[in-house]
Image (cartoon, rainbow, N blue to C red):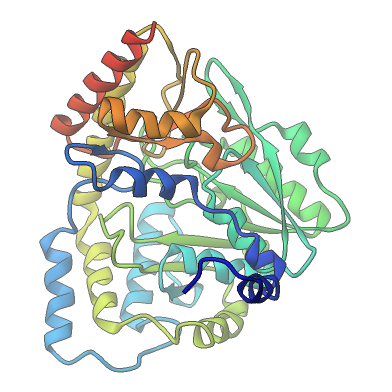
Length: 397
C-alpha cells in the first residue's frame, strides 16, 4: 500500500484535527532509535530495571489459575478498593473510605478519565512545564487546550512561578494539572505551593488533577507534601495514580483515581464505556502490592537515592553540566555546555556513548537545552552509564 496518495491524504484530513495533530513522542523516538543497538544502556523511559516482585506476581497467578477471568466490578474489586483505603490511611493519615477509590487500566487511563470529567473542546488547562508529555496530549485528545506555564529555574532547580501561574488563568480555564514530585524536573511542591494552587482553583472554580505518583520518591525524607495535607473534603481535586512506579509494575497497566464519592457513578460510567474494568487477577496482584509491599517500596526509594548521587556527582565533576540534584521523582534533568540541539543530542549519545536518554524538548516549553535521565537503576548499570556520559562530555570540551 502506498505511504501517501490523494485518497489517503483525504482520509487523514477527515480525522478530527485535535487527534490528528497529537505530537509524536520525543521519548519514543530515542527509544526506537536505540533499542536495537546492542550494548546501549536504556535510561530513556520512566522505569527501573527490577521486575515486579514475586509476591505480587504469585497473587495474580493464584487468581488467574483460580478462575478469576470473568467480568468484574467497574469501580474495582471491593477488596482492592479497601486495600487502597488502608494504603492511603497509612500514607496520608486519612480515614479509610473505599468509596473514594476507582481502579483504572493504568495511570494514563486515570488521567484521561479525569480530563473527560473536567474538560471539553476549547477549554484550557494550566500545566507547569517542562512536563511529562502524555498529560498535555491527553488534554488535546479531548479537544482541550493545554496552557504551558514554565517553571522558574535557578541554582536550586525548578520552582513554581506563582505570579506567572496566576496570570495564566483566563475565562476559558477549567482545570489545573499539577505533577509533584515531577517528571522530568524533580520539582517538589511545598505546602505553600499547594495552598496557593488550591486557593487559585477555589477562587476561579477550577478542577485540580493531582498527579502525585512519585510521592514516596522524596529525598528530604518521608513522603512529599500532598494536596491531602491542605484540602477540604469537597474541594474539586481528582487524584490520578498508578501501580507502575512504587511496585515495579509498569507493564501491568493498572492505576486508580481518588475522588469524592459523589463522583462515583460518573467515574464508573466512564470506565464502563472505555475498558469495562480491569482484569480481576491483575487486581489481586495490586492488593498484594498495597498490603505487603511497603518494604519493597522503601528499597526502591533507597536505590533511587543512591542512583541520583552516583550519576549527578559524575556529571557535575565534568564541569560542563548544568544540573541541580532533584528533590523528588527519579530523573536528572540537566544541560550540557555547548549542546543546544537536544533532539539530535539524544540520538548522538546512543551512537557515540551507548547511553539512551530523552531530549528535554519532548517535555514542552522550558525543556530546551536539557536532557532527561532515569536513575531508577542498579549501581552497576548506572555507574557504567555515568562513566560513558562523563567521558563523552569531557571529550567535547
